Image (tube, rainbow, N blue to C red; front, side):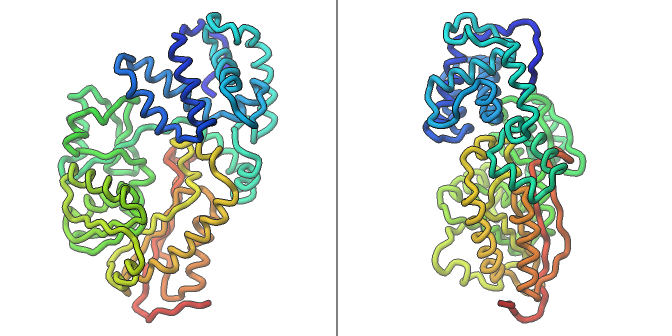
Length: 418
């Protein structure tokens, strides 16, 4: 958490605290995603200033992020969450942040010194202090080892910076910096990621003229490395087979200078519809969308120069942005999603031409979803060779946790070892 030391008492309007409690109820009682809840909440009252909006968003996210720790500190049973339990958690959190809660009778019994003792006691239990379920803590330690797992846990509990990617079809990065400065948006470059910028402070950049003109997209720096890793060139035929709403497909269009063809595919049509809107705003016209159905893969056999497989995964590398995922994720899901990953890697690579290249990517920090899947694939597909692989780490670079492997399909005939 941000701090647990005494300072001048924070004055917070009771209405804002009530909004935080209702938001948390939507997350933990109605099982909704935090970002969706907050988007609705912040749109609901145009009169809130930037400070009020920041308090609502940051307090809600921080409590979601440290939910298990706060249950421990507040001495609340995490089963069968109710509004009254959420109230005690919020009250305990605010008292630790030295907020003035005198106007809340239910919180008068909450003492800073006792809550601070509970906070210190929690540090002896990693899974409580870093706030993860028992099964996830055990899995992370087993796959990464104690030292690396603890480093990643601590990093994933920090708020992620807002990162944007320059749309090079409309401006250079320097031009974008200057355009944003005119709209009072200050940025800084990201070492090692040539078109990326970090915002110096969090603000609603979707209202800027630069965004509406399609001069940039919001995309994590680690994600931006994946498109570059695919080694595309103008004029190629590229298939993004798990495109979703298309962040990486849009980046590929930039790298290909709007030339050639990108086929963006997904099983959900609404995501591809969102991609079409983004492509239009960005001035991109070399993307074709296709919903994956019966014979979609077979019809594209041996047609792609490059193939991107950004496969469904646990999403553990993006917990900084989606902290509620660790409370919704189940161990059984990871077991099942690994079967899906293996199937996609086995079947979808049929679309690649001999001599073509494929990137297998996940937003997971777990080797079992990443390196292990690639190794298994290579063992059973001798006509593929690994060219390079890379990881990004919240603890090391400060990017989301991505894995990417670049493989080349040799000109030899298809051979699969069962």
